[in-house]
Length: 196
Image (cartoon, rainbow, N blue to C red):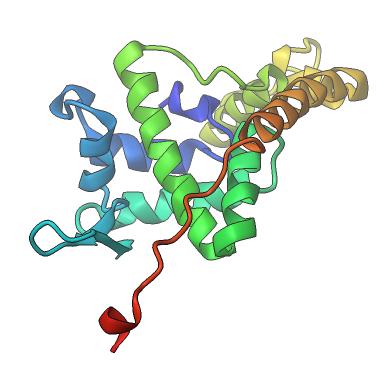
């Protein structure tokens, strides 16, 4: 749960809900298995050797965890970082609602990599993360210590907060610059005979 909370938009409620739904991550051989377990993969219709039609997500599997990841995706869209750039890139082509589901799918894939490799999210903001943990401790009933300032206090220092934000904003700009060179696949033209 602590590792999942390093992701932007993921608080204790989302992290514990996803962790409870996923269980042991070794059950999933690759990230696409986790995505399909959560029902975030697109449905595919294909007949024979014809082209495949990708539709809406399947919504099969853990609905509560899927809903939590979509809510986390909406929070990601408001916080700086590469995931926000991903959300904006998809939203510019397909709309915000589809972008939220695509970002939730991206979060599920990142979660698989984080848990299998035992690593935290690379673009985490330490002061914000410490504040998340401290707010949980206070809600759980741990005593406040007014004499000492912990790592969560760094979030109250504007210079420290701006420094962390600048780091993730530069990563967001780099992601936007990197993906701006990608070209969308042109849709195949339907012949008049197949249209009738």
